[in-house]
Image (cartoon, rainbow, N blue to C red; front, side):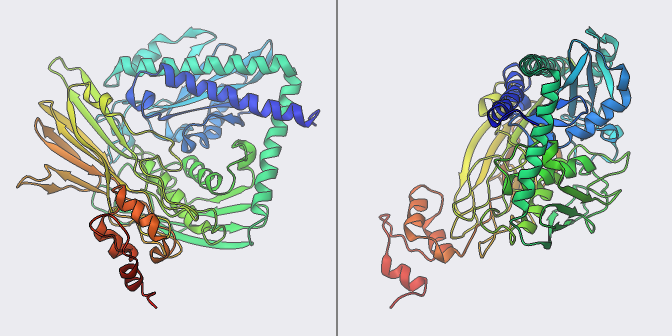
Amino acid sequence: MIRDAVTFEVFRNAVTGVADEMAITILRTAHSQIVASSMDFSAALCDARGRVIAQANTCPVHLGSIPDAMAAFLAEFGAGIADGDVYLLNDPSRGGMHLPDIFAAAPVFAGPDLLGFAVTVVNHADVGGGVAGSMAVQATSIFAEGVQIPPSRLVDAGKLNEPFLNLVLRNVREPELLRGDLESQLAACHAGGEGLRALATRYGAAGLAELNDELLDYSETLLRAALADAVPGSYAFTDHIDDDGLGSGPIPFQVKVTLSGTGIELDFTGSSPQVASALNATASFTRSASYAAVQGALARDIPANSGFYRPFTFVIPEASILDGRRPAARGARGLVAYRIIDAVLGALAPVFPTRVPAAGDGGPDSVAIGVTGADGGSVVLWDILCGAWGARPDRDGVDGISPLGANLANTPVEELERSGHVRIDGYGYLPDTGGAGRFRGGLSTFRDMTILAPEASVQIRSDRREFLPYGLDGGAPGTPSLNLLDPGDPGERVLDSKPHLVLTAGSRHRHVTAGGGGHGDPFTREPRRVLDDVAEGKVTREGAARDYGVVVTADGTLDHPATAALRGTAG
């Protein structure tokens, strides 16, 4: 039992603050652009049993997978865990998700007492394999994707395992970049360890363990109470990824969400079998995406930890895209998480109509660019491009923002251009791309890029071209994504959504993300809001009339009689 509510609240905020300090440490010390600028990493604190106690405000689809990674570490090292150790893994069959995501866990001791673990997950810029960035959609086996790390001891009681580290570094394109980001993970684990020891000093080791238990029970209790507001029953939804990048598709994601009043079951029976390409996920990643969907829709004030996970049960088909069987390729599995989130939210929309948004862009798109110099050295650039949220039940979608589940940032233009290998010629929003509705979906984001290097390998991961972001309550769907090679030239070519290209100097690429879905009948949107959209360049005059029944004159004013006639409300 906690001693008092004040003690508990102070502890709850303090332990979350330690996790956030870990994240800030990575942000300030990481070397690669995908980590330091796009923020593709996570941090958390676990107790001695491997349960997540607190997580930083980082990438949700990483964090729900930490319990599986911790189970793998504990199974491998068990009673041999020592003060000063640091463990690594990335093997999807041994607690990982995909190979670029390397977990690092450091046990934290206070004297003889194991208090818990400081854990970080970083998406490294490259871990080897056939294509720069190690996320080639076209990979058909994990053996083509890079170096596989089973649960391994990187640091043994304070002593670095140099031969092991050198083996990993020898298998990647930018070894010093990986070393720098790995050192950033270790620095964050050190910060987390110091914070956890400070809490043990304050509360005692036994008191800290009691508060951990209380925090987990608190999250469980609050989530069960939130679920109690729902009408018990089963609610189904199906969404799709367009294709697998190898010519097969569409790929269905089918979920049946059953609410019992205090618990929630997610049954993914009917979803696609595992695919030939690298879109396959792990069961841990499927669960993690599901947690993120429910957390985002229902429980923003509930601490996300292992107590939050307790009300969930899952049915995840084996050898499916949601739980691929080794040696399935996994590098591009991120799309799976975003489609799971869309499917789960689609199922929950009729149950919680005032909380669930329309579908967003379908996940951050990525363009991985690899350049090999004359000396054999490699440079890997990551262009992460987030598009839009779908409209919410009471307000518009957000433009140019990471989707629920990712918490990433668009790669800054300067980060891409300073390499000298690419030039960004355009970057912004496109009008009339947000799904029309009483509340408008967020706009598509575009990026125009010219290759400056003599030759570059380009791997693109995008989606939502065929299966558009859905609208809700009468809202229109969003608009499709697009990849164009050499736009405006006589040889302009529309690319697939997931191509791998080898481009030469002067080649130009335009990438457009999908626009978010709308919410509510577009003809009930306040004309003044449509006028504001036109003034801000988010909707054209033609789009205002076509999609919203609102007539805006050439001088930028509302034509009220024409609008009333167009909307059928005259007289």
